Amino acid sequence: MSTIIDGVDYGPLHQLIGTWWGDRGLDVAPEPDGEDKHAYYDQIVFTPAGAAENAEEQNLVCVKYHQVVRKRNKGTIFHDQIGHWMYEPGSGMIMHSLTIPRAVCVLAGGELQQAGEETIFDVTATQGSETFGIVQSPFMLEKAKTTAFKMTMKVSGDELVYEEITSLDIYGRQFEHTDGATLHRIVYD
Figure 1: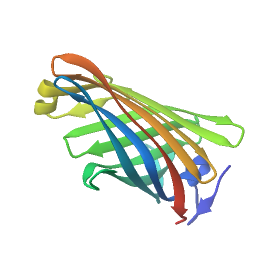
Figure 2: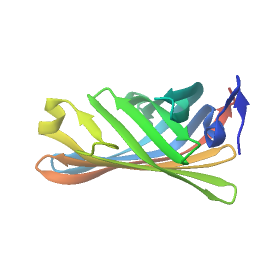
Figure 3: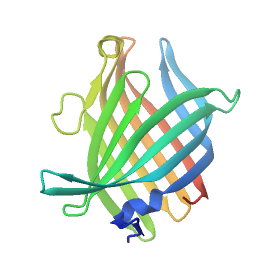
């Protein structure tokens, strides 16, 4: 399960490369008096980012991505995210780094699973962890603290399905902010 691009073996990450689009996303977000649900359009563009070596001991391959999410009822952007997916062939570890323009950064880690034709990318991060954790601005810590992050992404051919849970301490209570969508690859890069 690999593809070589410019001399780099991307392993299972090659399955992500391209432009993906979907119109069946659902965002369940916190509101002061409950929750708000938004149906959304979703586009994610994954591109090769090359190989990386750490301390002459760890070898990684990476793809970078940009995700833009628009509300279906108005077409306005309500989420913009950039990051990387990294794979360590030696250990089989998968890592996902992401940044959102609300002053929150996440480094999540986990393992790959194979279920027939489907590859499952499953990663988690916890606030306060020294390895797979969350960094956020003072405002976010006080008003909308992210305490945990979990994402499961399933890829099978030209279909990508993801579900993510961002655990928040917001409006004086704990809330599991969820996002989930089904996307299809529309362009191979």
